[in-house]
Length: 318
Image (cartoon, rainbow, N blue to C red; front, side, top):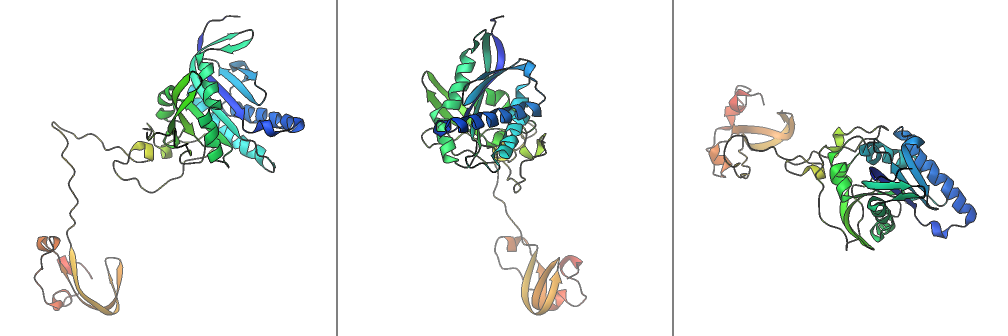
């Protein structure tokens, strides 16, 4: 067997709270855990020949062959795991909850198993105190997903099928010799509940908006209210395009709204104007001007101006 290091995607998975289980419960847990991971691989058509899997008792360690696209794992694979996990937990008194971490880098496989810094980092991200704290805070969430900073920037931030970079948040992980930043994601939560001591305010800059990323399983990100200009793609907004032409873009000016019509009196029966209903006697409506926009008093016009011939200001119907 060759011991040459190959660039592989490494997946580390672990079951939360397995130490509290008795022997029979552990066996049921392991069966469900393998069912969930296999459903994920089936969702992306990755066969057993394309990955190496090691059993870790209450978890698994997986290294994918170099030809397997990382985007398939951080997107449709994760969605397949999540959906199967929900199905497995239906009717269970003790729901199965998983922490899953990913990193990519040089990995060596010998006759004993996998080795390399990429393996070490994936395992430490999965088993970190930060990851455990997130699962305690999100106590009803069945799944936590953690990716290394490099994997986030190279793969997750680019978006794609079932990838939601705007719902990740960054936090520091300090475990043994590891002191790294990682990105945390709890499926179906807008952002993970990070411990205050580790969280960092770092909005991700998604390359593709959530509503433009179809999911292989038919699940789409919810459409929220229309974003404000300049809200940032990481928060579902849009980044303003660069100014065209030479020179710097002009500084934004406060909006000034001019009054197009001024209403003098309303009372009596219902009146309908421009799609709006006014209750009361309709006395008159007149066109506003620049002075009205500045708050100056506009010259008064006789009430009959707008009522004699059945037209309002600018000749429009009342």
